[in-house]
Amino acid sequence: MDRPVEKLLKSIEELTTMMSSRMGEFEKSLPAAGTTSTNPTIKTLAAEFHSFKNFVWQSLNLLKSQVELVVLGMDRLETHSRRKVLLLHGVKEDSNEDVLKKTLSVLSDNMKLVNVNSDSLETCHRLGAKKDTARPILVRFSSTQLRARAWRAKTTLKGTKITITEFLTKARQDVFAAARNHFGMRKCWSADGVIVVLLPDKTRAKITTSSELNELTSQYPKSSITQAKDS
Image (tube, rainbow, N blue to C red):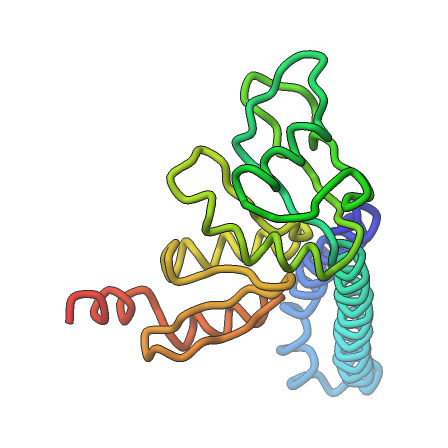
C-alpha cells in the first residue's frame, strides 16, 4: 500500500476511535435527561445529538470506502505494471557480479529456455539493500509471453536452491501469506498476480484482497480444515 494512503487510512481509524469515545461519554448523560426531562431544550439536544452522530458515522464510513476504492485501484495498476516481472531467489550473490550474466545462465542452463539473450530482458537487478543472504533478482522480461514461458518452466528448478516467484504488491503478498498460514502452504499459490486457494471441498477460489480472504476464512475456519486433513 502506498505510504500516504496508509497514513490516511490510519488517521481515519484514529478519528473514528476518538469520535466513538467522545460521543460515548457524552451519550451516557443523555438517556436520563432526554427521556425524563420536561425541558424541551434538553429533549431537542438529545435528538439533534443522535442525528449528528449518525451523520458522522455515515461520513466516516463513506470516506473510508472511497479511500479503500483508491487503494484497490492503485493495487490493480501496480499489479498491471508488474505483469512482465518475476523474482529469482537463491542465486548466489558475489561482489562485483554480473547480474545479467547470472540471470541469463539460470534462464538458459537451469530452466532450459531457448533463444534467451540480453535483448530478452528489459532489466534485471538485485532487490533491496545488500545483506548477508543472497537478495532476490528482479527480472523484467521484454514481453509477457516470455515471462509466461519462464513461469511455466519453474518446475525445472526443482532440486536446486533456486526458486522463482511472482512479484506481488505488498497488499497481495500480505493476503498470500495470510492465506497460506490459514489454509496451508501447498494449498495456496499465485497466478498472474491473483492468489489461488484450494479449498477443503476441492474447489478453487481466486482472491486479491484481505476482505475476500476474510470471507473464505469465515466460511472455512481452521477447525474444518484440520478435520478435512484427518478424514
